[in-house]
Image (cartoon, rainbow, N blue to C red; front, top):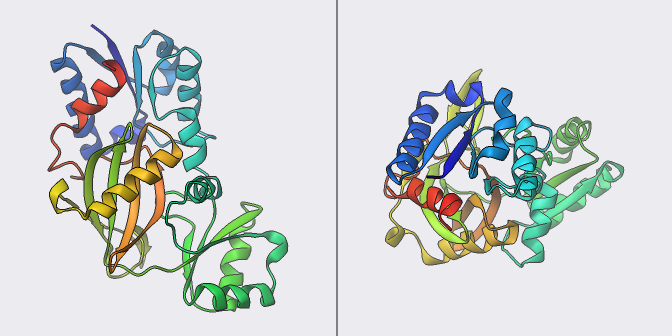
Length: 290
C-alpha cells in the first residue's frame, strides 16, 4: 500500500465543489489499494513520509505550496505540481518564453519594461498589434491584473498601475472568442477537454462586474468532438513547460488556434471532467504506479 498526500489549505476546503472533488480523489486512491490523507500546511513535516504528493491549493513561489513542492522534490517524492512548473506558470513572461522557444502558437506578444512606457512606444504597439490590446501583470492568476485597453491614455493608466508590482508587463494582441478551450494534460497525454464560455459582461473567465464576481460556464467536451489541432496545441504547450499536470487555455478563432496561457494546478471541480470519469484514476496512477 502506498500513501498519497493531498496538500490542501482552509480556502481549498471552503468550497463544496473542491471538497467533493478531493473526496473523489481520495476514494479513487483507496479503491486502487492505496491510502490517502489530507495534509494541511501545519502538517507539512509529513511530506517526506508520503509516497506521492498531490497539491490542491493555490500554487505560487511565494506560497507555502511551493515549499511543499520543494520538500517533496528534495525527498524524491513524486509531486504535482512540481517546483519548476510552479515557477514557470506563475510568471507569464517565463511561461511565454518557454512557449515561444518551442514554437507554440500564442497571440502577438511584447514584453514591456518600465523604461518603455512612453506615448510614442505605446502608439507603436497599437499600430503593430491592433486595437484593443491586452495588458497583463506577469504574476496574474484567475484573470486578476489583466485588462483590455482601447487607446494610449488607457494603456498608460493600466500599465503604470501594473508596473508598481513588476519591472515588466505583458502586452498582447486581443483575440476575440465566445469561449476558450481548456485542454487538460497529464504526463504529455490528454487528460480532459472542456470549454469555458466567457460571460457577456466581460472578456475574462472570471471578473468583477458592478461589484459582483461573475464566472465562465464550464462544459466538458468528449475527445472526439474537440478539434484535433486544438488537442495537439494543448499537448505541445504543456510539453513546453514540463511533464506534469496542466490546463492549457486556447482560443480557436476560425480555426486559427493560439495558446492564451498554461496553468499548473488546473481546476477539476467545476465539471471539466464530466466526460472523463477516469481523471483521478490517471492522476493516482501517474503519481503512485508509474
